[in-house]
Image 1: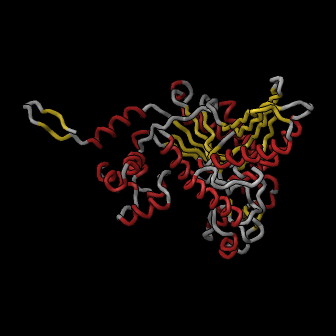
Image 2: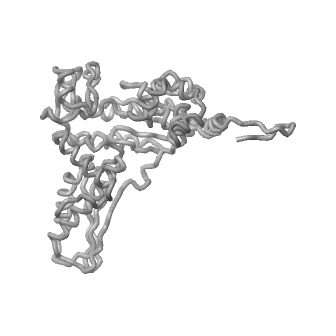
Image 3: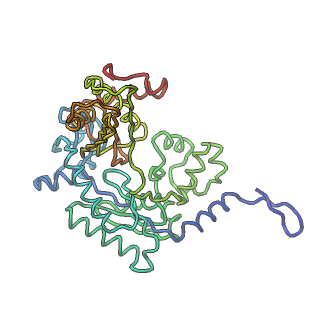
Length: 405
């Protein structure tokens, strides 16, 4: 980028400086809070059983062949981490109490927290089962953004009994990083002028979009602290990492204009099938439901989403339409949802009348890993789903499916 000087000479303009200045001007008045329930699964178990307080606790498959879904801070001192094989975790911390996960309880408490936030927040987004973003821009004129968020956190703790931390800053990225620094059970406000110096001494792992592969690539370049990313020209990172490099440079400088998505926005996926001829073939409809749920679940996993509600719809030949839904523990697996879809269909189908249309909708979607709800399933089950999804990614969504579908 170039500009003309007063004497007519062309001068090069630092595009990194311009972009940083523009985004700083756009975000300076925003206030975004990120709330994260601390060791959520463990905290719920401790609410249900006070005898677990202070003890090392691991949530996951109890067979020894499963993986760690969540663990307490006491176990992390021994090196235990989420997604670690249970066998390895118990070698590191043999005194840990292992509990099979109960996704139904976790979903219930997650919804309790969301209800408290929804009752008080002007605009919120449920980002996962244990995370929420809240846009409280403008609150400082009336009450004070920090004071409002502090009181909301206290209300959540009082009404649910769960420990929760929050970060407050000008955007989602910095708020989320601040939450991580505030844990456990704390709060941290990073004001706009302090964003760059706040991020600078942190490990590049703290930047939300930097995964394991990107971390290794940056470490191979000698980059381990956010400060080094901040000092690099944006164009250099772009040459090294493409468009992803631009985004990493922006996040390292606390630049993120991603909006908080309102809960009123559509948070569901669905599919319907209208028969060429109205039918009463119940066996065929059950097979069709299997295929429909299987396809929707593949879409969930591809987008790293979980669902907490399934709805089945039927339309009779006279165009009467009926729906029935059921709240469920968060999941993204077909074999969990197919049975529920069939049960809902059989409750709905109360007349001996031809059916014109059937539909399935998955709603109350949140971001999350498909491993969260399979505490008793073996790694082989998770690997099977991942292998089938890889085949679908490569050869198309219908490359692998159940025979009955």
